[in-house]
Length: 308
Image 1 (cartoon, rainbow, N blue to C red):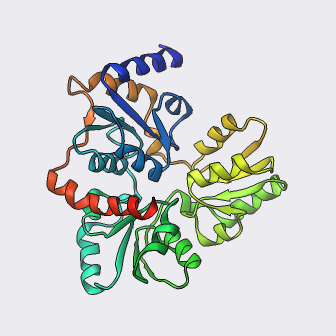
Image 2: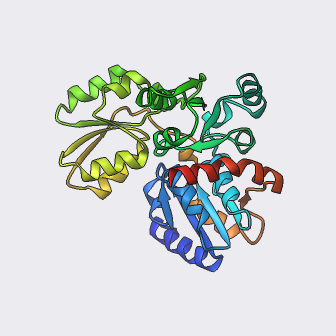
């Protein structure tokens, strides 16, 4: 079966099974092309809440599918590849944060959405990279505990010096691996290019960039900019997507190692086989108790309220 034939069959199957396909921006181009909704974590969270379909098939990682289930508990939610996790989401657990919260109860616990449902039950509000600054600014409390990404948290802290933001040692191992030397090498090779990076990168890299923002922010900046060349400091798939969407502009990866291996686990055949397996039990379904959904979605609802 060719890629085009498989895409056509996926489109037929999703209509037959009344399934909406949600795809994170880090997925490959052939998966993005068959999506009903594409975006970063925040956009997909909002999209998931209003979907009119019996089933949701998520092409991303586990915590994202959990979020979709929290927001649409009446729907069946599936993850296209059951092994697609997130190293950052596993760095801190519920007991660890509950203990810190008990020792410092005056702080509002702000959790990056890249966290497990269990951890979200002891957090006050979630944020994504595109909404973190707006939401932390809007919180009616100056004392904040920001988890787990200290780079994104540090980015917010620098922008909001009026807030007392406590950080813990955690973050995205892919984005945080990017070095200043790599940035300077890319800039030397493409001196006319603007440098656009994700705030999950280390502070020294962010400071040398022309723009720092979420995945959607980086893409919007590049599309709207009058500049013609860009060095992209986030997941390497964004370089490809921008090349398709802005063929008259040039895009270069800041580093060839900015690859989310968990995102890359999902393939077009995974999507095809998941749709075929929805009615037969062959698809990986996200199952959560009513109690866990109720407790964990409070901070997601608060994210949507403050970020709307």
